Amino acid sequence: MRTHVFFDWILTTGLAFIVSACGCVLPQAESAQAVTKDALLRNMVRDVIAPGYQELAVKCHGLTDSVEAFVKTPKQESLDKARQAWVAALLASRRVQWLQTGPIADHEYHSSFFYSKVLAIRIESVVQSSRAIDDSYLGELGATAKGMFALEYLLFDRKGRPPAEGNQSTATFLESFSGAESPRRGQYVLALARDLETKARQLAGDWAASGEQSASAKFIAGGQESLNRVVNQLAQFIEQLAEQRINFIIQLRLPIAPQLDRIEGSSSGTSQQSVAEMVRGVQKLYRGADGGGLEGYVKHLNAPLSERLKGQLESAMAAIESIGAPLEQVVSENPASVQKAQDQTRALEVLCKADLASTLGVTLTFSSNDGD
Image (cartoon, rainbow, N blue to C red; front, side):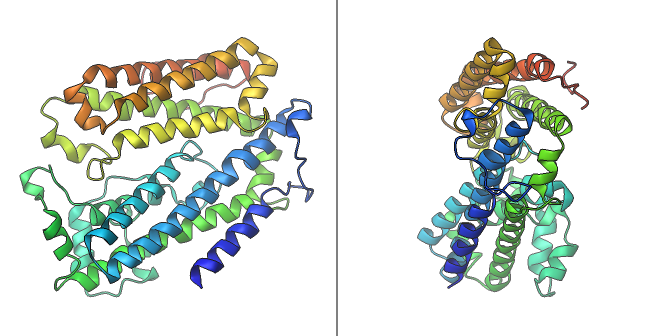
């Protein structure tokens, strides 16, 4: 019954987000319209933002179901499915991570999906506590003990971690969900998954809503101001991707193993996948659908630049995908491939900061970390 109710909700919100801020159904052939800023912003909501958050809600729902099945029957098969569902939810969040304003900022949900510096001591203290793991208790927990990456800590063993943090065999890991502490640990895992699903559904609903005060209406009505925010966030996002994710790992001293705790996604082996999906999210934003996205708008203003951006996005995506394994693994075995990904992503960053911003009449207002 729960699954049917959820997908009824998805159908309802899926229909809702095609309604414009004024309450009118958006035309199907948006590409036939004149290329305008208003049309661009409407298309961003309809084709990129709203469906991106809907996908996140669906993946978080799947995560809750898989975690619930694992907690009830902690076997290798159910554990594998729960881990796969976690990765799917993580990657869905990566595809919308470029957007840092709107409902996710209004609700202060950034840390739930993107803050990775969780603390084992905080998480284990929840397991040891006698307090009921309810909404009140979750509300008191800081970002170091809840959210997407607290779930990563609880669902993935920590092979390769420094000795002080301990290593776990799969058998030992499964015992933690079937021994004396298992009910408490299972309740905690399930509460975290449900919390993520609730938040993802709220974000999807916010972007699907219509009316003058809806997130989509405010975004569209923002005009140039909304476009300024998008380009600033996009440029900053790509800079962080190039410097704080790829170049950060390149700069780590070898051997990497003692430093895995500094690398986001090392427990789940998702460092390369995360970077790829972040770029894929940027590609989706740029391409839009049916020629009505940012690419079409840029092409109207500067056709050569639109092709350069498209080509550089493809080059960055190809370089990242060619790595083919977690960054922390490949940087030791094939550092040239990681360096190529950094170079291509850095070139994309420069294009966005200089040419794209200039063409769209945007002044970059964020504080760059790389001297640009």
